[in-house]
Length: 179
Image 1 (cartoon, one colour):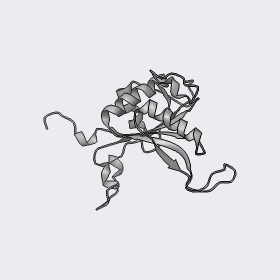
Image 2: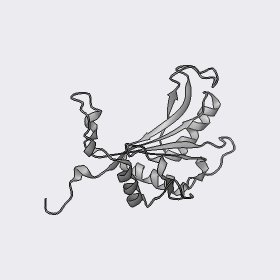
Image 3: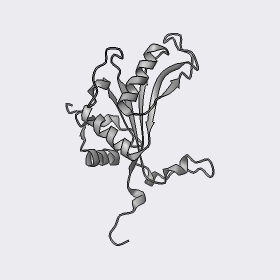
Image 4: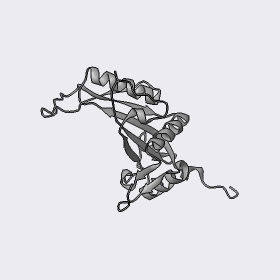
């Protein structure tokens, strides 16, 4: 290896999950699925309630939202480019967790480029979760011989902030600064 870096140490985005929580099934959930399909170009999957909550009016096993998981690298790059454009390339530093993952919200699907307001659908916001890992992290998820990933091989929040700033030209805003 003449002067090249170790490719196993280079972080990469493994998946992006886009979620819309409606809190109920029926017409609102179908409209949220339409909005999610227009933004991502993929068909969404319904999410189900894990517990019964009388205050929220949900029952265990009933549909309460929808999500799309994007794993194709070209689709990830295109979606994140548009999503960061909606956020004006500015993300608060507290949106990064201890594992280096990034989570942020988008208030309206019509903010995406090329999306027009449809009065039949209405306004739906969404949550975007971006998982940043190094190659080889599958060791922790595989069925046979699952192992822990060493702390030195995990992506930390500081490294994640630097990676997103470099690759997507994001401005990471600290706690005391204005957005």
